[in-house]
Image (cartoon, rainbow, N blue to C red; front, side):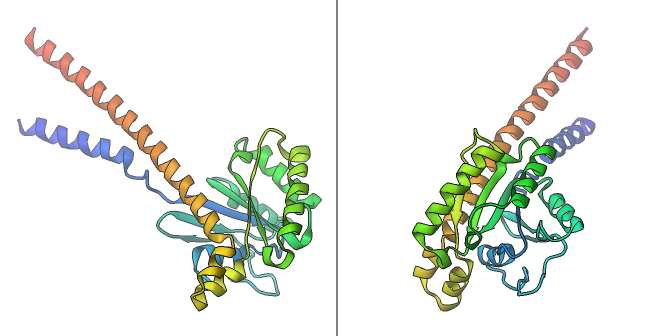
Length: 241
């Protein structure tokens, strides 16, 4: 009797081990050109300005990671800087659940190196375009109409050069406005920055993945329990014969 009890406990631990990591943080990689505003953006959306360093000189040369309750944020080097740092950025994209392609609105449309990098990512991972989201920075510097015009141009570039069948999501943000709003307690700056809208979208993605993982784990547990039931039934039949 004690042996059977131990076996049941072991089975319970095994079943629990199937589902222990379903709440793992969503891996979110931020990639883009040097000076696209990746580090400042991540400082804003994570509210961790001391973790993601930014400045007038190149500050991110290796992938930097910050993990909170829901997300694991990955800050990558500029994809146009050196071949080594582009390779490092590619490594940051690998295994991520969401890729935030950060583009400076003051630059206008996507340039060739940005398009080439995204094509390179897609060649390595067929699901790349499905997890790609565009984050357009320095929104407050260009204004509503200019931003809308640039987005339309970029959308045409995406249809022509990337994936004609996917309507990518675009978010315009002003990272400095968000950080200023936090520091000064000005809710209007926070909301106008566009960052909260992106935060909500990422939380929806996290919740969707959580529910999907829970459904998968429930199916696995049901399958394991059904196998155990069949096995126990077979053993009982053998014992009775």
